[in-house]
Length: 206
Image (cartoon, rainbow, N blue to C red; front, side, top):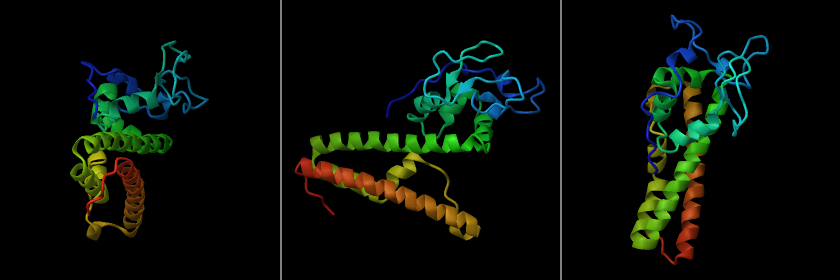
């Protein structure tokens, strides 16, 4: 996985994310050109949800905007925990953590998170395929085991797991859906590995 170097200072000053010098009220949707309310000036807008920010500026300050999807992929492909992204862009974890939970922003964040997971798995599969070519059957069998046991997914999305006994019924249903989605993604990955193995004339060792 490629390593992304963190800048010496965050892209944006901390004051960009608060409505007053006392840091009492955080700006959330007001940071995004497409989400800012039409009844409010776009003073705080620094991001666009578009893939390409070329030519886009803040109407009030005239400053160029940054593509939020582009920034997210840039840092989170190398660090899916999002910590590097938070520090590089916002300067601290809590600003990003609160922003990502905001109800109008969360759907965009969720889509980017899923995309990055797929990208990371895809890159892992490419590396595994290369290893298969060089080291043959044993490497393929190890790769297949990692996928089937969900180990790669745990590395891509290392969130702490809650014990089932402490979950509410709603949390249990949500956890089940997440597990089913992960299993489906890993099954697709195993199928891709199997196709590569067949192409390379490698026998699957179970």
